[in-house]
Amino acid sequence: MSLQSTSSVKKAYFDAPDGQIHFRKLLSTAEIKRNPVIFLHMSASDGGHFEPMMDVFAARGHDCFAPDMPG
Image 1 (spheres, rainbow, N blue to C red):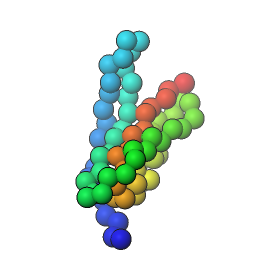
Image 2 (tube, one colour; image 1 turned 180 degrees about the vertical axis):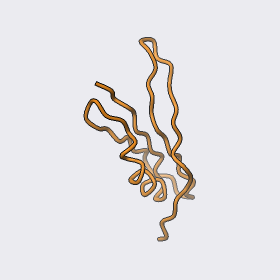
Image 3 (cartoon, rainbow, N blue to C red; image 1 turned 90 degrees about the horizontal axis):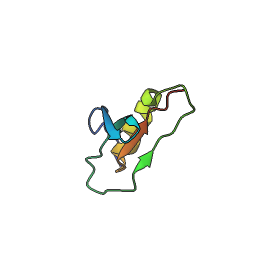
Image 4 (tube, helix red, strand yellow; image 1 turned 120 degrees about the vertical axis):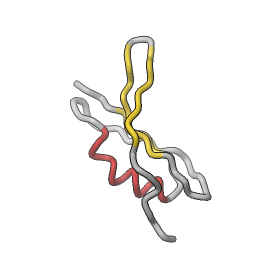
């Protein structure tokens, strides 16, 4: 199976009752869709360091999400 980048990671936000939730997303364009993957990190950081892994998982058919969790 050939792994290639599906697209670029996008930054987005969701308006929740208590404020905004910022996250990164990469939706797979693979023919065979698999379960979505949510990348979680420790507090006081952002999901940016998951971008290389999101590329790999999206190429394999997973939609990827990485929420920012500030301190």
